[in-house]
Length: 451
Image (cartoon, rainbow, N blue to C red):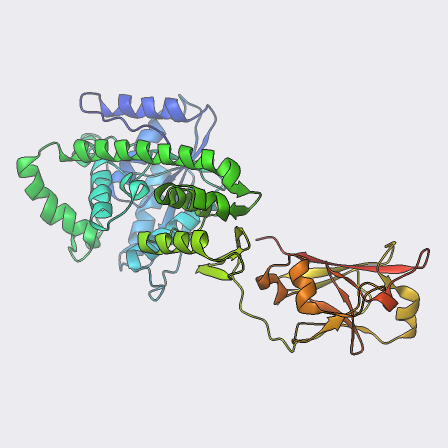
């Protein structure tokens, strides 16, 4: 996370150049998020003035939300401004769902960031400034956010798509941007929704902060400084979680025994860290506490699961693991093997692989004499005899002994020949269907799709 310095006595161009020099290697591809408003217009103007000095490959992106009757005019204004500066311009049209449950503001923000992530650039430059930062801190405080939320917006944030988000103006007050724009004769558009105090951010901007300013004139810098202190505290918690994760996270699994050995606060911190590693939308404090309590206190045989959007957290024995959220399949479905080396089963979240060169597995000689192979799911009560010196055994028992988690048992494809269960991937083959030494064999394995 980049440090955010305020610029009370430093000329804006000099401050901006210092931020750029600290963050951007020469030749960086920078895409400015250009709304057409004051902040982004100044940001693009400042970058345009530095592009030769720092060999910046500069471009601009305008996201057209279509929420305002003036949206087309804003796009045209941005395009004309980029032509004036000789900056390559791109526009992205997005549809904002009104029934997403997020609210219009959050849905629009999500659409913008999705558009940002798809750009071919090293850095996406956003025009957030010191006033925005202060507003974010107070909004998050009113929402009861934790340390990460109260840390507000980082000045520099690496992205999973190898594109960093940068906010070079985060230490600059909005009135300084206004002074710069007026001194350079810049023109910008005004979003009519910015005066609508039904939106929480506008209410703070127009109703609350003017009152605060009467008693605390430095509210911008003090709130931004508090955000930085909280960001450092959040970073320390991440470092602590990283230490606990050395033993608490094994591959992609969370060790519930280690989790229970930690204090409740430290355990929740590790759980939060584990969820963040998998890019899960963080549950609220109450939900997180309930998850932690169940993970550490449940009996070893208890089947616990928490649905977290596209992922579900399951606990099995002493470990918790995140898997793709799937609806339970129709247990009466059937599939037929036609000799292909791979049979995709998207309903079950994976594929069956058939190896005609395998040294062990189903007897190909017996298969040639029998009917076709079908793939089915558990119905209950199935039995198979994988060991010739032991009687047939219940499928349920074999799955438990094999350590196959309950959620995988529901979607485990079972191999039948006519109405006889002949093979269970990962468990074994029926005794009298096993290929003998030197006999041609068919190997059948089940591969779960990666998330």
